[in-house]
Image 1 (spheres, rainbow, N blue to C red):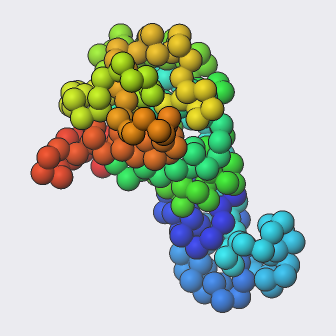
Image 2: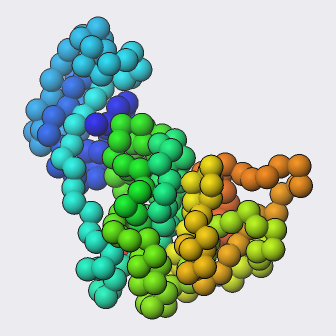
Length: 242
């Protein structure tokens, strides 16, 4: 379910199968033109749409799309289609954090690997927080997080665990380039020890001693910038889907 003009516009331009669109009369002409007959456009009053949405913050337009089946890492890793840059969120369930990470992934051109305990990237809240960028990010799934990291290691990925351990390496010294997978844990407990041990390196963002950690969405943005952009502001790579 997409809510709001920008999110729905990104849904329509994504190539995903959109089943129906619902809007108020002020958006009817614009979205009738954008859908080009690809899906029905239903027009209701603000009050009626609020009842459908369940709250008054729908911004005049809603759309519902068909949920795709994301490819499994085990079946894809041996092909040339697997992106060289992956974010792995094995246990991030907070919808705002997940939406924020997905938005940063889209901004820097990374794909996202979902574990068995990762939150739903297509929940209404995640879609809204990501501002619809969820529809432009490649997703992959893995049934076991340890097996996923081992598969990535075996295929030449540098698996980098984001930690708060002050004995870990500092982000600015982390090598760039090559195939990279960044691994982020949930805010409450971070990454499980067994996951960190399987990663090829552990990296931290240095902060003052009085503060124990950063919000994981903020930390992910900092990590992504470091591993994506050189000193001149140029990207190290072109995203696999152009």
